[in-house]
Length: 134
Image (tube, rainbow, N blue to C red; front, side, top):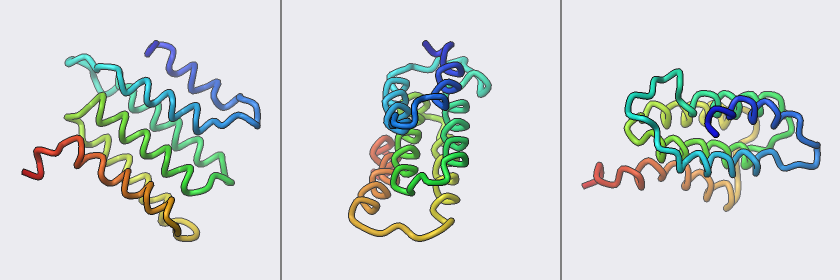
């Protein structure tokens, strides 16, 4: 099903307005997180690149997307990257960089839910690579 990923992402933009595209993408990222990347997979063949590009494009197009929804997408993207590519921390760095850029714009996040989402996002690499802390 990895071969159909570009088509799937393309048609996500055509879903009905009432469809929760974020939830569709989060579910897809969770499913992709079970994919085991071949050891000889190149950067060009990575599933991370098209998904990351689609998330960025969605945020640019969706001017009304709240920061909490965007945080959920970044969390899903980082989780997928850590599961599929645990040795490519550059994918997590890229996700964190895009998230920082988004957070720097507009009004600051406030509230318990926002704090929970930020904590979940920032703790993922530490939980995945717990041996780093020992």
